[in-house]
Amino acid sequence: MIRVEWDIEEVVALVDLCFKKENNDISNEELDKELHVLSEVFNKRADLLNIVHDEKYRNYAGIRKQYYFRVLKAVSNGKKGSPSGVPRKIDYEVVNLYKTNRFIFNKLLEEFNRKYR
Image 1 (cartoon, rainbow, N blue to C red):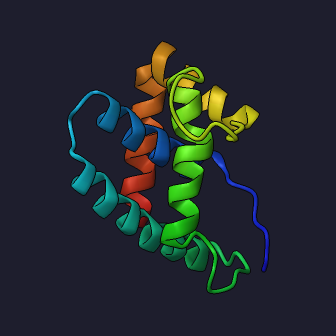
Image 2: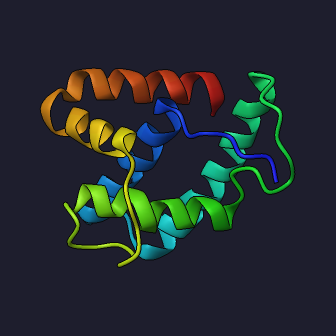
């Protein structure tokens, strides 16, 4: 398996999705569908950026795991998510950006969507 670190664009997309779910803007079924869509988008992005990857790269199961182990834990300040999950510094930074500078967060999200969706 080829390991590729998550970058800010990918984390912004996951944090946005997580806040939508936490704010009840989407259902569990919509979350599941969006995680599948993000898998496709992340793979398209990797191809466009010439990121070397294999068939496991940002697959649905991996993205779902990152959502529950890292992002949900960071968004909920440790109250939700997998008990064994450990958010990374970038997860907390993006959550903080969402909470303190929505303008920049939204610009990053808009740019991500424009380029890769």
